[in-house]
Length: 74
Image 1 (spheres, rainbow, N blue to C red):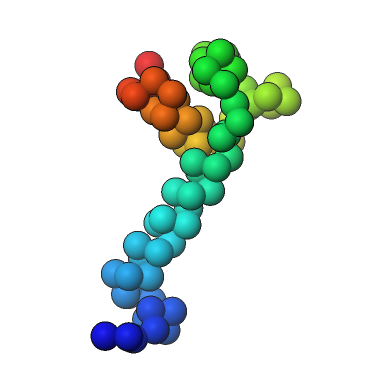
Image 2 (image 1 turned 90 degrees about the horizontal axis):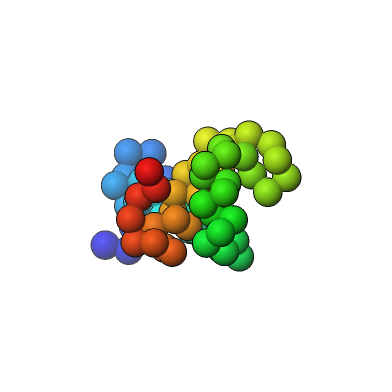
């Protein structure tokens, strides 16, 4: 116990820490986007600037959709 997880590449704790840091970034990315914009972005496959969604943006948009509608986008 008390072992530093940053020194072990195979550490399950390090893996979980990375997972939750990424998840935090995903959830934060579209935090201020409302329901109508989320639906439009999902349907169009484009971000607010009109560019195609990156993989990260698509995953973040799924997270925001789930927050707003309590289901995966279809």
